[in-house]
Image: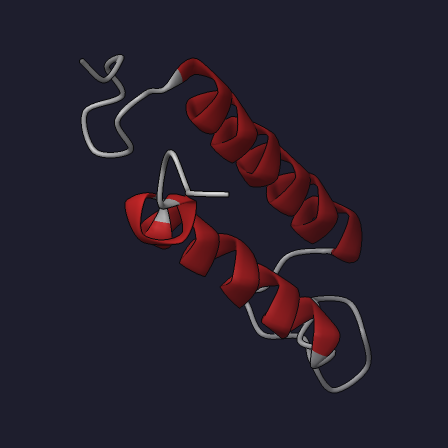
Length: 75
C-alpha cells in the first residue's frame, strides 16, 4: 500500500517536540524530584499534559490535512 502522506517528514517538528518531552520524562528530568529541581523543568503532570496536548494537536493537523507550518488546510 502506497503512502498518501509522508507523516514523518511533513510533521517532523511536531514529532520531535513530543519525542523530546518523552525523553526528558523518561530520563527522570522532572521538577520536584530530589536532585532534579531545575527551574526550567515542570511537574510530571504538567509534562504529561503538554505531551498529550501536543499529540492531540498533531493528530488534528494530520486528520484535517493542515500544513504544519501555516496551519492552513493543504490544497
